Picture 1 (cartoon, rainbow, N blue to C red):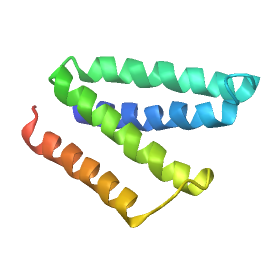
Picture 2: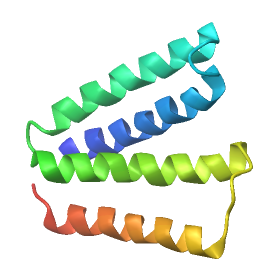
Picture 3: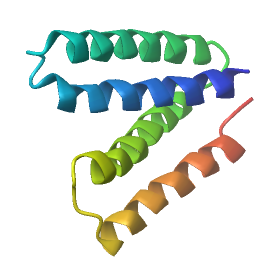
Length: 106
């Protein structure tokens, strides 16, 4: 169950990171509210996950999910570059996340 909470926390991390892009420096009320709510949910779920998972593993997976998801959505939503090299390095992060899941705990 902790791994599911951790993945969900990572998805909410993507939500708040993307929300920062839409909030225009936290100056737009609705995107700012969505960003803050996503941040609180993400942190809360991470806190629940580390009850049973090693904190180092959980944090690395959480940030990895956030990094890959945010970079991927940045390509789609904000027209950020999608070079083969960039995609390859994002793939390396995914391999690391899977490896931590397979070796990192409960």
